[in-house]
Structure formats: structure tokens, C-alpha cells
Length: 392
Image (cartoon, rainbow, N blue to C red; front, side, top):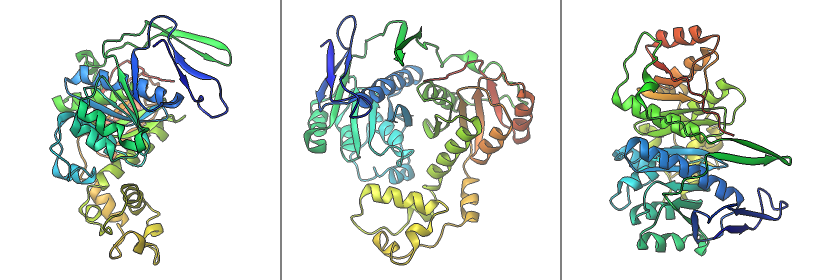
């Protein structure tokens, strides 16, 4: 297949639309459904991310994409009982490593992953397909699918779920092009490797110790940022992104946005949140939305008389600011990557509030000294990678 016709482009008025190869065949096969323009953008960006995570860590990887940026990315480390509960997979069949990677990627930011496109580094098995089948999602891309997985996925969304098989051996041309306003842009593909020891050689902070787990998490953060719309920062803990701030014009807004997401991920593990008295049979999306609002400063929106009865069997008490602050303070050893330098120490101040202990960033700001001093104030270990990872 040399080309694939699309219903329309980014918007319904943008016709005609297609994907095609100027030379050779498309390195993919649409097994089910009819993916659209944005679906393919998400699929091809997310596939690159998980393929690179697998190569860097040696473990199965998964990503959850929305509007050409990841809402979550992770490798297939086993899940604790707590994570199984907050990701709603505690009732599932035994989880394969790939299923664990998917549960982590999809569960880190369940609000933003709603209606996502999924990427899997390995052949999709039945355990992973079972988890995908019960989430609201647009499609999945993987190098292959077991027969049982195909049957499970084909039955999703009344038979219209998008399932794409990508050739894992496909290597694109070293030069990439795109058009904007009729003008063609050309550049070399970003083939930089982010799993090399040199990333952690320049450590200007007083604390210079990186654990092996910290290095792994920083590599995950940087690879995730490589495929995230810039400006962007990424918080990672225990093999998964827990907060991604994408497409912000200001670095501090990236850090705040991603930090708030990381805090929400951690607050979902607070016993008071985990034990909310939900009514039996409440939909997964409604439960996600309710938890998100309950954690936020708008908690009264789900706790008002006449409203809470829609979600709970009894009215929960408010999760106070003091309780939230105390619980967030228990989150430690978080890794933080940035796709370019931090221009001010305020980014470090915000990162510290979300438990950041390790940082990898490009360096090169005229205020590097201020950033280093702020890290030293909190005992944070920071590496200057010398690598910028802008993605547009």
C-alpha cells in the first residue's frame, strides 16, 4: 500500500486528505477501523517514543497520546497493589510486562488520556488488549497482535476501533520535510541517543550521586520529551511519567503544569482518596472526573448537597490543604527532565515541592548559577546534558 485516503485532515473542512509514501510502500497496515489525520500523527509519534524506550531500557514500553503529545509513557515494571487500584486494574487477569506498561502509561493522567491513541513497543497480547478494551480510546499502534488480542480489539467501539500494525524494522529517510503555508521545511531527523553515560558526566551541583533507578527515570523523561510538543518538562518516578507539561510558552508554566499533574497522581494514592465511597456501578470516566475535582480546590462541585448523592453512598469530608500538603511531602526521589535549559531557579523551587530529587536539563542559561544554587539548597542532583530536545 503506497497511500491511504483519510476522511478529512485536522478538521472536517480540510479535504482532500491522505497519507502516502513518495518512494516505496507505507510501513504500516490498518487492521481495523479507519484512522484519521490526527490519529496517524499520534500513532507515528507515539510509536517512535515506545520503540526508543524499549531500546534504551530493554523493557516493554507503552505510551498514551493526545493531540501529538504524550499524556503518559512508561516501561513494564510490576505494579504495586496501590497502583493497581488507582489504575483500575486490580480486578484484571494476571498482567504481562506489556500490560503493566500500558496500565502505567494510561493511568498516570487519566483525565488527559481520555480518548487517547495507544502505542505499544511489543506484540499486543490478550492481557494488554483486555485493559485497552475497557478504556475510552481512539486506537492503538503496535508491531503485531496475537489472534486473541485482535479479536478483543475488533470488538471495541462497535467494531470501529482503530488498530494499526507498524513494521518494526522500518527506518525513515535521514532527512524529513513538512510544509507550512506552502513553504517546505527540511531538516535532519532527530536521531540523538539519550541512553548514553555522557548524559550524566557534567554534574555542577554539590550532590553528584545518581542512583541507577534515577538514571533510568531521567532517560525515560528525556525520551518522552523528545516526542512532546515544546516547551515541555517531564516528571518521572519508578519507570513512568507522572506529569508532563507540553506546549507551554514559558518554562515555569511547563514546570507548574507537569508538577500539578504529578501531585494529582500522588494524591490519588492517598488513603482518603482511595477509600472514597463511590456508588456501585459508577462509570470509569465519571469516577476519574469526580476524583480529579475532589482533589482540586473546586471540591465543592462534587460535595454540594444534591450533587454528592450522584457519586457517593455517603458524603465524603473535604481533603484539606493541610492534608494535601502533608501527603505530597511524602513523595520523594522523583526525576525531572526538561527539553531545554531552566532560565530561573523558580523552576527548581516548584519541582522541589513535588518531590524532585534528580534533574537532567540542557544547561546554558545566563542564570545557571542561580539554578545550581537552588538545587544545592535542596540537595538535588542535576546534570547538564548539553542537549536540547525541542519538538514541533
